[in-house]
Amino acid sequence: MTTTLDPKERFQFGKNWSRFLEHLNDDRILEAEKSLKEKLSCENLNGKTFLDIGSGSGLFSLAAYRLGAKVFSFDYDQDSVNCTKYLQEKYAKNDPRWNVEQGSVLNKDFLKKFGKVDILYSWGVLHHTGHMYQAFENVADMVNDGGSLFVSIYNDQGIPSKIWTIIKKSYTKSKILRPFISFFCGLWLWKYRIGWGLVRHGNPLKFITEYGKNNRGMSASHDVVDWVGGYPFEVAKPEEVFDFFKTKGFDLQLLKTCAGGIGCNEYVFKMRQTKP
Ligand SMILES: C[S@@+](CC[C@H](N)C(=O)[O-])C[C@H]1O[C@@H](n2cnc3c(N)ncnc32)[C@H](O)[C@@H]1O
Image (cartoon, rainbow, N blue to C red):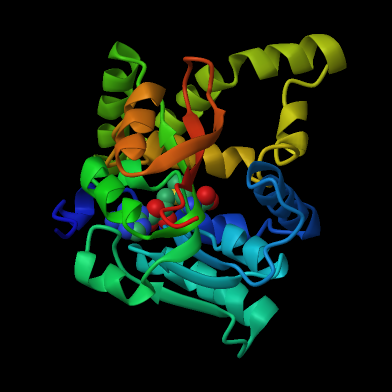
């Protein structure tokens, strides 16, 4: 299966990632490394194969590379691929330990070349393909026995998720509405942080400067655009994701939910060993 949605209806993730790269610094790279080490419960990834599906900016491919993995990155969006290639050339020029390509997780023929990997990382991606369960099926086949599958999937909030789908669709369709949608959704999403900053520090925007800390090295303004624009958009309850991957031979190692709220639930699964 390939991605069938009209390109004009898709959010241009890569354009947002290329703006994010202008703000990339050592602190953000270290935060990304920290997030991989914490969630995968390891100090390094020496000798591991790491497949980054939907690599976006390329920051997590870079983090895995710096932690010692052999990295394969791909993304559907050519601008995201260019971002990842930019980081590959900057930090790992001519090193065969990091390869970057364009491709879709929905294309089974394309996926064949990667075989099975030790770590499959696909953070915030499979719900943006337009065929989330097909994407689940495809990645479930790609992890070695004892290997890890690290995914994050938007939480199903019921009616609010349906409202967000309409907002995201409107954002991708109408260029004129984009600044208004981002502004008002940003205010709404960050209302507590803005209020807390004002009361505690006299600065409603204080959280923006600290946003990347303990938050995968991300940036507030780029995250809000990624959130309001990110379409196609699907959601799943934690138990649905858990049940799906359990039937495919995975055990859940780590779950970080967004406590029933807005955002992504993070899952680290381990593929059961078939041989002792
Ligand atoms: C929210 S970004 C996440 C980027 C990155 N994984 C991270 O954690 O920062 C989603 C990415 O998934 C990519 N994507 C969407 N559909 C895809 C598909 N069918 N195959 C591969 N990548 C896809 C988008 O182009 C985008 O770069």
